[in-house]
Image 1 (cartoon, one colour):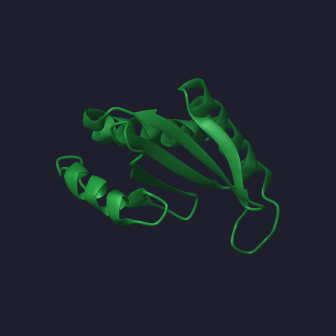
Image 2: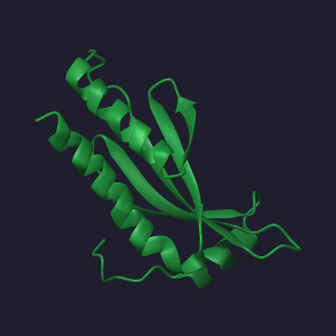
Length: 125
């Protein structure tokens, strides 16, 4: 997704309203190490809320422990937490990082999250 492309937040809200769990999600970017998406939650009578979710994979596909990779992921996780993301284990191989945002902050927060992850890679290079 290019940074100039807009996110159809109205469509996200409608999808959330019609879903069983009252939540909708759109993938924004994905690599072998992480994925970033934006979501909407609808909880009547409150207005819809939006969030950015970053899923960071802790292990490689081959299952081998790669300490430099783990160190980069740890730097990313710490930086995301410092930016207000909550961290929770999604499964035994990844961590979900989520931050509630305002409707107009979706693209900026996506770019900021990608930058945090990119900066952690440069730190250890």
